[in-house]
Length: 405
Image (cartoon, rainbow, N blue to C red; front, side):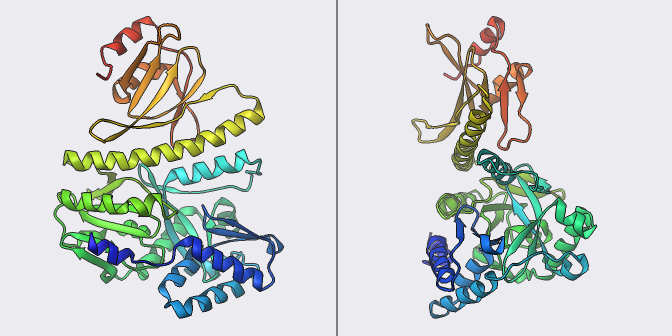
């Protein structure tokens, strides 16, 4: 769609920017630079500090090409000194802003650190649920970097999360010009604040109810700085958003949520498109994300289990395609095998190794029957269940009546 091409343009990607940034740091004499492309961050050991590059990348893209090297150099000059969050709440509360994340981001980050043998005692994320699969957190934003605010920092300030979050929300409201929601086509809008807090504006839903929409506001947040808005009854526009968001979510890094959300009765809720074609498109989008997240989770869990001598099978989330080209996910539960199961569209019961009997049942139908045999694993997002024991003959017979044809 031409308007999306115009919106996204042909700007330098993050990888090109990061390479230029690191070269500029090295040219300035900084040699101990560790780059984490997944988190858009740089670790400078000599300063004992980690810097996030979102603000720098934003300003880099906003500048005209001849000015981009100057933008990088200004940030390099700032980064070469150690930056800390002030210990006095009064002096820094004006720099607080809310950020929006997928809860899996925090769970997978913790798991990755644990798998690498890192000390988790200083990891103290604090979040507030917005809707299933979406949460808000706090950030301290300065020209040099964006720092997450956790429990330890709040204790240093002697303020509660709620108090600090209310301040952050007030700051966001003050910098949120409602005219910065750009209309791409009748009934289709995109956030154009270009300050890396576009997605946080879902915390100000009154802005979307003022738009000319067909039905309640539906948002899609494919990346941390991209916010699309349309109406609940605009199936064609929902399909356009999903189709054109694929490269943003899966190829450009810093993905946020694979879900559509609707705001009604004062709350954000996951949105299931009433149009069956668009609903299938939305499911396929989510299943791709699920498969990636479960794969990352599986690798970390296996490393942790190996180090701790834990003998449990971490079942993969299989991403498959039907004849009609729609995607679905499934997991395998084998008789006699201690298993950690992902939540998938279908669940396959491998009954007997000799006969090779397998019973494939939709998760929504199987779970009510086998839930007494499953134990939810704590602190894992996406969710997994520990299979304590395999279904007996009676339950298997019931499951056979529900199997996928």
